[in-house]
Length: 302
Length: 213
Image (cartoon, rainbow over all chains, first blue to last red):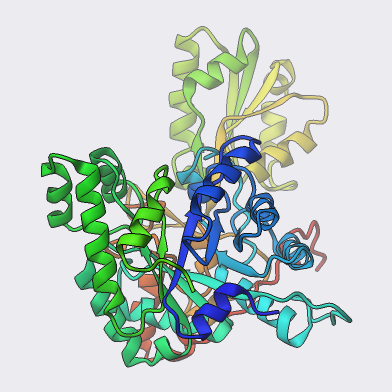
C-alpha cells in the first residue's frame, strides 16, 4: 500500500520530487511530454491545483495521466476552490484510482489570480483538511463523524510550509500543528535565502520536528532576470536575497548562472541535518530538471 | 455598524437615464459613514440636477431598516414619492429591501454598495469586524475574529503569504494572526489559543433566514 515516495522517505533515502505545471488548456499531450522527459529523475511528481489561483487542467486529471505512464503523482488539493464535501469526495476518488500521495494547501487567494472576481470557498483551512484526511484514513470517519464502513482511502499526507513568512516562532508552532493534525511529509517554499532557511531548520530541530515529519526543501532555478524579478517582488512569501538578485542580473549567461546557484543551494541543503529531500519546481523550464538532478549526484533514483 | 459606500456617480447617472428620482437616505449607519446622510443627499441632489436628472425630492429615514418608524416621513413626502419614477436609496442592503417592500409598485435602485459590519477606526476609516456567520468563535481568539479579518478565514495560524507582518491580500494591513499572537502573549494564553487545532467551523447558522423571538 505504501507509495514509492513514502518508501524512499521512510527508508532514509534523500527524496527528489518535481513539479509538473498543467497547461491552461485541455491538452493531455503537454503533461505526457513533460512527464516522459522527467521519468526516472524524481520519485514522485506534483501536479499543481490551480496554482497562484490561475485556472489550469485539474490536478486530478494530471495525476491520472501520470498513473497511465507508470509514474507516481502527488495530487494537490486547495481549500480555496472546494468545501469539505468536495474535498472528501476528491480524496475518496483519487484513492480509488490508486493515487495516494496527496498534498493539502489552503491555496493562494483568488484576488491574486486570473479570476479575481471569483468567490473563494475557504470552508476549512489546510490544517483542518489534514486532520479530516487523517481521520478518514486512520479512524474511518468523515468530517461529520459519520463512520466510513469499508474501503477507507489510503493517503500519504503532504503539506507545505513557508520558512520565509514572518515570525519564525509562529511558523514553527504552525508546522508542529500541521504534523499533529496528520502531515507525513512537508514540501517547503523555494529556498533562496539559505541563512534564513538554516535559522528556521535550527528551530525545527530544536522542537524535534524533523524526527516527526519528512521535510523536503523547495528548489527553483531562476531562469531569467524577468522571472527573478517576478518572484522577488510579486510572489507573496518568496525571499530572494539581494546577493542572488545581483548574480542573476550581472550574469553573462543567466541560464547557466541559475543552474550554478541551484546546484550550490542543493549541496548546502543536502548537508543540512533533518532535510529528507528536495522538491524541484522549474517553471516553464522542466527540461532542465534531469540535468539538475544529475549534477546534484541524485541520479539514478533508488 | 453597517459600512456602505456610494456607487460611482457616473454609474448612477447612466442607470437613471431620463427617469425622475426620489432619494432616500438613512439617519443611522449611512449617515455615520457618509454614504447616505442629510449632507450627502443635499450634495447629491445638486449634482444630479446639474446633470439634468430630475430629483423630485429626498428624505432621510430614521432609520431605513425600520418598517414602523417612518410613517410620518412617508406621509409628508407621499406626493413626491408617488410621482417619481425610481426610488434611489442611499442606505444598506437591508434598508433598500425594507423600502422595496413598503412601496411594492415602485422600482428601487441602490445608490450604495454595502461592504461590511465594522468599526470606525479613525475619522476617515472603517474596518471589517464581523461576517455575521451565526456561530461566534471570537472567545477562542481573545475577542478577535480570524473568520472575518483573514481573507482566507484561517483558523489555525497565518498562511505562508504574510510578509513583514502584513496580509498577503491587503498588504497595508497587519496580518490578523500577528494581532492574535500579540494579544495572546499579553493575555498570557498563547499556548491555549495558538497550539490547539481549531476544528472546521460550523456554518449551519450562516444561512438562517428568520429569527423569532
